[in-house]
Length: 472
Image (cartoon, rainbow, N blue to C red):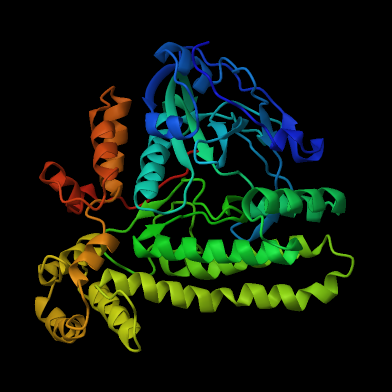
């Protein structure tokens, strides 16, 4: 094989309680449709021939040094605990240590059934694979911690959902696939030995400065808080913030019914499976706190005196609120051109958000237009913007370079839902041009490039995406 992946598989060296050894299930006619060469270089992966890479990233050929496995975990799904979930349609091939010294997982998503499939087929269809490829790489370009996409492969097989659809596999990369649910499964089983082993593994891999279970809890709470603020700062809605989708590494993981807002509305819900609005845009901070409380409960279970640790864990989780307010102020004040927030600046940002909701302003375009002097045009009633703008300009007179601050905080282009859907439909019909163009634009989200001016446009009435869907 000319394709070389320098595996060093630490997770596979843990006890058998953490996973089931599982090879991917071969497909009939793999075809490589995307390969992320810059990411491969960082991971020290030497690419091979296109056909060879299609075989490996589809799961038809297990590369030398891999230790394929399906991870076990539990999770709260929309608030209801499921004691065993696990990788039902994914296989972790192994890990590499990159040129930057970072250890990363390489996982095949949509690679066939596993012991955790729960009657599912273990497959993915092309649409969600391309959506996750585009959106995860866009998030990376925006500077938001995220899993990444290494490759996408058509399988040549059909997948049955509501209709018959083309199958695909995503080669996904993460600094790990450890989740809140990974801890919950062992706490639910009263498997203290595995919980202790997992805690130390997570500390060693992600937070080597953390001291014990409560040190790990504090590090994860801080990482999750900063992540959610970054989501909010770009109008991102995860759509399914279950504890099995909550990464210990503080990365965005599992892009199912995710979406970016067009018109700003604080309670936006686009996920088709979030019927009660549990994971709506403005509730994401509260859900992050709830998820971290579940992590705290699982971590405490390994301690000799769990009751004694409850107060400390509660203080850590409740402390997320103070960090959130600090980070939100920093992020949103930067979006309006303020580098170092002063007293009263948060109110300025909050008032603008209220005006945007009332004026049905586009989230991304309004913030970007502030730096170009054209934000007034984003509002149904531009006069409503004028009084706020007078106060805002007075405040900016004390800033050194507010335009530069705004342009660094406010992207020009995001993966708008209607563009993602159009890209998927084109790819299903055999045209990958829109997919490639969208990736190229989103790789430089803060650049004003006239070639991608059309991608800035909000959807027309007949283009609006009313709901986004999970790939399963």
